[in-house]
Image (tube, rainbow, N blue to C red; front, side, top):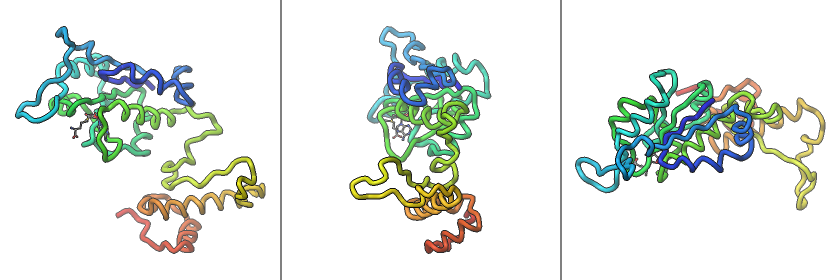
Length: 248
Ligand code: SAM
């Protein structure tokens, strides 16, 4: 999978993508990062990428010319390569969207700066606007890193077989169960006995219960969309949840 990133700060992506599983996937070529310097598509000697907004007001807006050229140069008319613009007004990024995007071979990511980009770019060159949450960043670059990390780990071969993403929070529709590791006793706190039992069925049931418990406590709305078995519903009823689990 290749991530083409249109940005005025191409160096931004150097260090963060060198580390951990994403770093390994970049070194092995499973993930390719192609930062595209927006300024290389400017013509004036100041390499201008922004200008004052028509109608007045504070801040600057990214001019359309260099953005249009940068996107066109990388997309090369291939409609199957989605162009994504980061924007607080976009659809909120989540696991489902990360999974959908991981099915593509290439993505073009546009990182906004200043007050954002000229609307004509959004109307004619962008397939999807994505927000990473209800807050405002100074630029789209941190959002691009978030997307690359979340999408990248879902690409086959990026996580080792012992690090499968299939049990992760949200992948199952629920939050994940708690984890414990050595030592068995830490500051007078013990690892739950069931995890030491060696009884895999019992451990599986315990983990599912903890997962349901945590989701009910922290994100009960997720239960409406999660795939729940009769056993899950029984556990939830024991936990005091009798809510309608069907989609509204
Ligand atoms: N004037 C814009 C507004 O009020 O919606 C905010 C622009 S922000 C200072 C500059 C750039 O950061 C945006 O164009 C976008 O690319 C990026 N950005 C800011 N917040 C974001 C968010 N929550 N998710 C994704 N990108 C964001």
